[in-house]
Length: 146
Image (cartoon, rainbow, N blue to C red; front, side):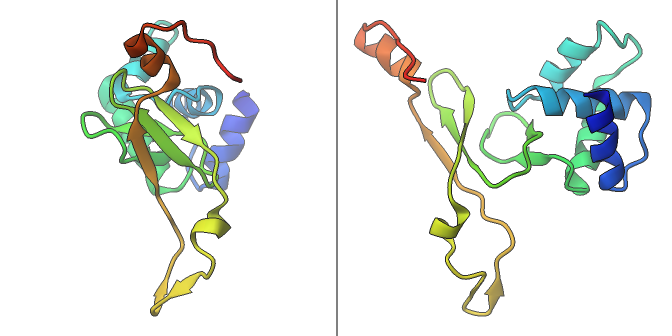
């Protein structure tokens, strides 16, 4: 996975460093839409000199270069996604967990131009209750469907 992290960095014109590689590798292997704190807690054990400031500035750089996506779904924390493909997000209003929702971007925007606007990015976020929280509220046992 280290090789894929380096390839992603260089493909987006980002000079690889030990910290950048570790953070990019984390983003490629964790689909948890992490915050800076989550990444810090997961990586500091193997990189004791890593700081939250370094993580934040690296994530900002990665997002600015298109190597990751900065999410706007969570109003309480900056979150990031290593999957830069077309998809939407769902956040449970009870537990706060964010899940990917795969969508067909062509269903949403059938034409790349609309009223003289050129659309190159569509961001759709959903909020509600996840199946686990809904089951807990109803007093039922949660059984994943997939």
